[in-house]
Image (cartoon, rainbow, N blue to C red; front, side, top):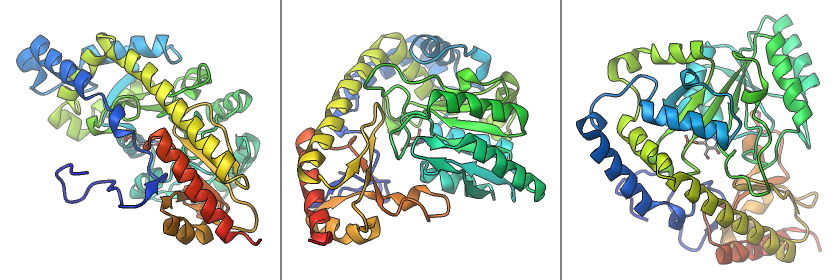
Length: 388
Ligand SMILES: Cc1ncc(COP(=O)(O)O)c(C=O)c1O
């Protein structure tokens, strides 16, 4: 794959079927539809598409997004509550910039999206994993943890989690825990940063209500992105937050200096949305990614029956548990030798101690026949590492 750069995020390795990276299947990136949208935006807006943009993002995208969130996701967002970002990673960096001071404790789900850790540590935060069980975070135990930290003189301004079709587990936090969590945020100084990256990739009916829609204003900052539903290369997403938080974002020095981020791409996205291309593309993606999920699940059932694997209702990941006493670290060299790659579960725990017997398997990037072959290779590796 040549994308004209010396250092890119992912390079395929000859002979390896890679279940490690959460990247889209290349053939599902909407090249032709985007060409139309970008051309349409330039024709409609002329020079205004190429100049500096409004601080919170261009009106056409903010308005389309507000309507879309009301209809397709879970509603109640006003235009004043949207800030167009460079994607969910940027949204997290911005939220942390406003919420976190060096030396603060930031709570993170156990497990959660591992690449969020670096962004939070960049702010000088100490990361502490919340207590959790097989259904997700334990809210009562988290409240006790916050109390203990506060009594020890620590500030705990922020909790980061991916409650819907989570990376890495694919699971959704149950509704009752969602309600308890937003109540906890309402009675403490905690702001919840809800990474809602996978909400629209729902394969079995609608996703559960977001924390944003359940919480009081000022308690939840929600991160959205077009990386998974359109294309990661756009570097385009949004932050949902109360209007005062959005005003603080628009007042940041570099926004005041340079205007809204990614203005030209944001106008193309508005055209992509308004033409109906977004909705039909996401409907296609749901069909394709659900079929890819099913292909990997079926392959694992057949070829790796000793793995205990979740069946997620959305998102891009399976969370697989190895037969004891095998660990992901022990399996990795055998997997590599058989030509398959995964991410070891411990990477998704802030202190690296949990998840030693788990693997994250991504079904997003490979076509169904490659996923079946990857499952067969993984099954061979597990068999080679298991006592007979
Ligand atoms: C949970 C989660 N958040 C954020 C990201 C990155 O999103 P973006 O490309 O919009 O920065 C990913 C991508 O893998 C993700 O899985």
